[in-house]
Image 1 (spheres, rainbow, N blue to C red):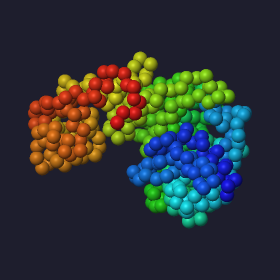
Image 2: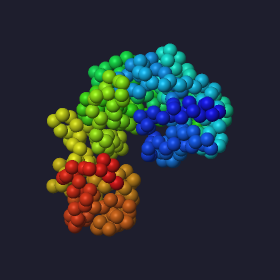
Image 3: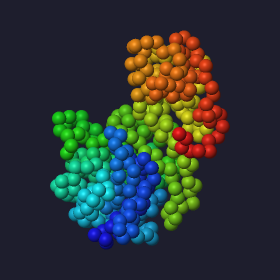
Length: 395
C-alpha cells in the first residue's frame, strides 16, 4: 500500500494541468506517514462539492506533445498502475473517507485503443467492487466507438482534450494527434449514441456529460478561434463545458521558451464561454481586438451592454428572458426571479431587485424601472472596465 501511495503521489502531482471540476488549487492529502497525494476540491455538474482524486494510470507516453511534461523522449520519472492496483488503492482511500470521487486519465502506451482498454478495465473493476461515486474518465485519442460506448456505461463524465481549436493550431502543440479523426470524432460518437439510444443509460440511469480542454496560448491561437470551436461544441455536440488551461512552459520541451499565458486571458475566455453556453450569445456578438482576442480590461458582457444598451436600456418589467440575460448582473436564475416577481407587482426600484438577490448596481446603467432610469453609483466593478485589471479573478 505504501508503494502504491508513493506512485499515486507522483501520478497525481501533475494533474493541476487538468482543470475540469476544480473549485480551487489541488491540495496535498497526508496520511500518518506523511505521504502526499494531491486532491482537488471539485464541483460536480449538479453543484455538489467533493474531494476528487485526479490521477494518471501511467506517466509513460509515446506521443510527442510539445507542451506536456510526460511527452515521449523527455527525461522524467515514469510510473504505472495496473488497473486492479489503481482500483484497490483508490477504494482503500475511498472507504477511509479521504476521497469521494475519481478523475482518471493516462499517458498513451501501445496506442489509444490499448490504453483505453486499461482505463475501461480500471473503471469496470471499481464498479464491480461496489463503487457508486463520481467517476470522470478520459477518452484517449484513437479510441474506438465501442470503447466510447462502454465508457459511457461506466462513467459520470467523459472528456477528450482538444488542446487546440483546429488542426492547424494542434500541429504546433501536438503534431502526432489528428484533430478531427482522433479528437472530434469521439465527441460526435457520444452525441450520436445519446440521440440514437435515448432509452438506454449508463450505470446511474443517465448518460454521462462531456467536456473538453484547450491549452490557451501555446499555439498562438486567437480567442476567436477558441470560442468558435467552443460554440460548435456547445451547439452541435451538447458539450457541458469547455475548460481553458493557460499555457505554462515546461523545461526540456520544445515550448520551454514560449511565454506563459496571462491568467486574465483565461478568465475572459470563461466569461465569454458562459455567454455562449448559458446566455444565448454568439461569437459574432462579442467584441475582439484586431488580433482576434478579447480585451483584457473589459468583461465581455459589460462590453456588449455598453455598445448596445447604454443608450437603449431595457425595461425590466417587459423584457423577455432572452433580453434579461443580456443585462450585466443578471444570470439565468436572476432572470427567472425577475419574471416571477413582476407577475406579482411592477418592479420600480433597485432595492427591490437587490432584495431578490440580483446584482442591481451592475444592471442599473442598462435598465429602466417602470419607464425610468434608476439612480445608481458607479461601482468598482464598472470602473474596472476603464482601467487595467490587476486582479485576474475579481469577486
